[in-house]
Amino acid sequence: MMIEREAPGGQAGMSSRIENYLGFPTGLSGADLARRAVVQAQRFGVEILSQEAVGARAGGPYRIVNLANGNEISCHALMIATGVQWRRLEAPGIDRLQGARNLPWRRRHRSTVL
Image (tube, rainbow, N blue to C red):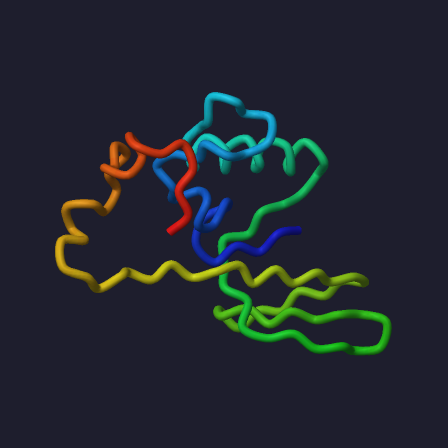
């Protein structure tokens, strides 16, 4: 089971374009990558639960996950991947660049680290 607070794929799923992911030489959208990940996970029997996990504890041989709605899920093994939370950069002119695919520095340089 996978418990996902927002949407499968996290920050990558919200990206307009991912151009440096192994196996996709021409790039792909974050939504497409997330969709492919969901299909693959479901193929292996993963159930995806849209809910927020708010706590976890050990209880004998089980690991118990507390959900925001008050329910609990128990399991024998638990892997926690907290991911990242997107934050907006507060800088002059950021609205013009937010979500833009054709950024000025991408035309001049093949690789740019910001």
